[in-house]
Image (cartoon, rainbow, N blue to C red; front, side):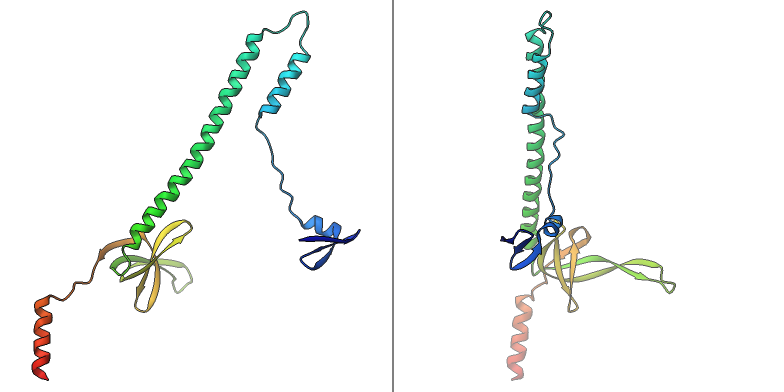
Length: 189
């Protein structure tokens, strides 16, 4: 909230500034309009009509043809803009669906390849790949791309889905094995 307290100062959120200095710090957004809009087209058309030779006027069909071309161009621009918006919407839907699918992996075990970036003895960067395993604990978006969070050896890793090699559940003990273990425990007591 801005409040002017004198002719040369301005107060913004309780802080008083020199009005000229404050104005200089504010970014002013200007919109560059290189497009030939409806208004500009009509102004050109009126100027053309005003400046034509009265003894040799231009044929009305040429004006109608120009108007039709302008209308077609405007429609193509609108279609292009709408396709860009549709593309963004489809991309968001794809990401949402993928996040939903990845969330079904929570609690499952995965194997993945982790790229390890290090430096050699001379300080030159080197990288190698290491196979890792862990349990999926969540899903995150990194720069708009879905990734999974994996816990392995007490550490958390953000894993790109392209690096996943295998997804599996831990095999539950068979009921026969658990029954046998229960029997052995009861006999031992």
